[in-house]
Length: 361
Image: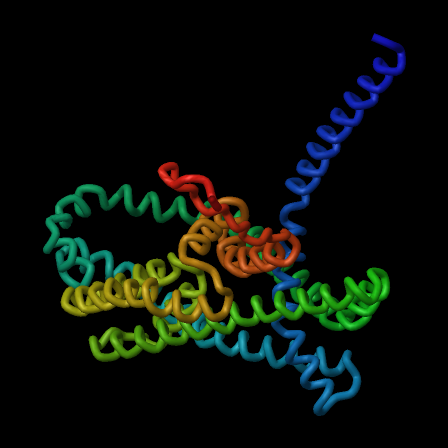
């Protein structure tokens, strides 16, 4: 083998080794900064959802984009804060009353009285609860120990939420400049294509968010109606919790059903059975009617793609990944359709008949 061939082989080996090391380094960097990348992704989705409102407000009422962006963000957070207050304030009030009545409820449960005591007696668990009451009290005391970790998690969540808000605000504020700079760099031909792709991505994300909110409103409204008819206390608060959990694709309604059914069973077994039957029926209606009809128009994804994308994203990024899985899959499908060339169907030659003679003649 000549010296030139040896150099060529060595160069190729070095290139392959460099590509492998560069890929490994890139994946390590992505994994190390995954929390920040998730924040940026969430902020981008929020910015894309709010940007049309800012553009509309800037064209119609407010000429300065900074003021229009500030007004839209303030309106959005006032709305979210009001919904959060409707959920958190009654829950804190009820939690305080529960803490005050905890000793009395424990005595009633030991004697087989009260909703929980009657429920344990009905399922034959009252004797077990009496025998292990000291363990239950010890476990309750141990729950106070990880309070420092809980406070740390809450502070980290608040810091992440504040970071997402600031990032989304800056993205919306600087969106026109960023778009103009990118379009100038790519030239007139690709600029039109990128502009069209951007409009489709915005339509996909906005359609997903609006469709998901519509499904959650339907779920929360029906839940409130059923809970109110069953006489379950705090029906509005529970319905709001169910509506929020229903924002999680595929499994959200099931998580909400556990909360609502648990509250209903504490009220009465009959109410619990009614609520449980309602959620079994509603889950089927949502999965086979509401989700396909609304999401098919909003994101244009088939149910198998939705399920696989949600499972993979939830495994990689938890709850945030599950929430962003469907718009990410829709954007991926859009980019594949735009950039992957599709070959036209080739016309196959007509099959020849072996018994037929040669043409002509």
